[in-house]
Length: 302
Image (cartoon, rainbow, N blue to C red; front, top):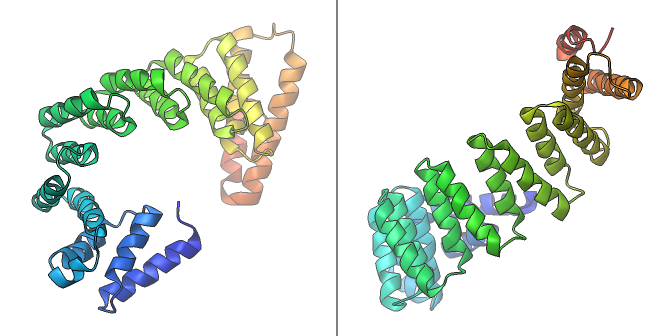
């Protein structure tokens, strides 16, 4: 992710190039370095260089890096005709390249030609079965077609090999949630917490899933993970504070006062309610009365 200084530098260079001040190649290099998504500008200035033989000749081997960059930008801007020409130029220079082959598969995806993209990826995986980019493209393709179950299946196969990919575990959890497979989603968040126990977002997401599943045992566990989220964020997570309040209400309804730890539960829910009121008083005072009324209705405050 670009820093504020880098973002300002990129914006300044963009203005310069747009106004005819030169520096198009430097701008394109910076966009690539910062992984910024400025497809319309990349397409415009990249084509200017590629269509100018003199400017293109100065790039040397970097010419083909530009072809690839422009191809991505063209697909993002729905200019598949330009993307096709760029990919053709790359295939001419690098016949049989897996990297260019991946680009070809993405080109078919951009066109919505799913079966053609699938053929390309299957062919490439036959030569390079552990190519992470291609395996993830298959997941993305399934999601684009609205097939979350297939996407989850592909991700499961991917994670059998690349078990340390935290982003993949999180993506799989979100896919399971979207198809209401909450037990499987909970397992994914358990893996993430084991890998990164100090990340409050995983504790919070796990607590949300447990609360959604319901049942006394899950609610009690959810409350613990909401509490750990608050602990890891220094008491600054509003969602976790709400979570403790809602778990407390649900647990009280299920146990109907028969809980042996009732005093501890009351102390925790009181602290959570006080934290919410203090949070809203500091950051959103106009909504304080609404929150106070809500907490009174669920008997969190008197």
